[in-house]
Image (cartoon, rainbow, N blue to C red):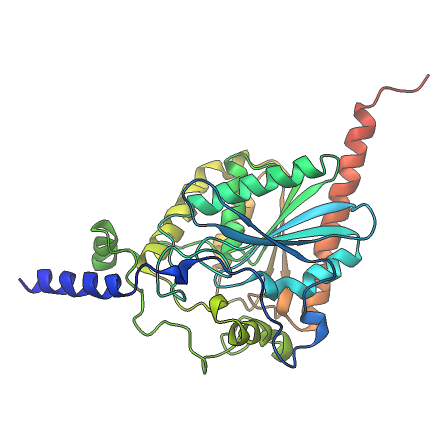
Length: 349
């Protein structure tokens, strides 16, 4: 009887939070007051939505260069991140001659939500994110077939990137920036049981919602840079639809499932890969990062002293070497594409 009452209470609570237009995608964001222009959208930035089947529509953005781009880079964001967090890095990479796309996962950022409340990080599966990544890479390649395409997956976006490549996404190279992989064991016991009986949307923590007075990126230990660490919180304060709190039990179960599912296919990923990680990253498992990189045929692991989880938001003495490593890898893929095209061309008589 007590168990039935608890379940009934949970179902009533979740029903009260469901439905309505609050799940709809959010496109155009407003610039936060007093935010430095270097954190604004790059020149020519354009938003779009990609929808695969019945999955939630996922928001993406893109900015290109004034001349023909040397390469295309697809950024897959970390948990709770919106594309706005990457504007500074997109601007830097545009300046090097690259078209940059940023794809937010289903249920976060400006993408459509699975459930309400809107700030609950819920995903019953990562398969929709994987499918959207594959669809977007096909669209990118079709629009510029002769341009190298690099996928840059940050945090959980790194997990999605690996899974998408294993399932046939096309790319010339893979960059994993502080990738996050589940260690397993978080979904045992009552948590796993709740997911099995259809209550995956139950929050993993009941006090895990977004809070106006909650810590910013620096306060969460994601970066040691005060100014960059405040960027995401600034966008969320000005644009409530971008706010994200903690995960649901279903999201955690999907994270564990996807982390486990990629393992058998890692040895089949033969494309060049670069794994970038910080030595002070408490939000990712260093052993799991090393294990994933070692399982790939052509992966190089590079660690940055004192770097935390959000390397793209770190202070300059960490972020600049990180950005240089990204640029060097992209240039190598450009040269490799040129060499392959030259070798395939008939010799002139």
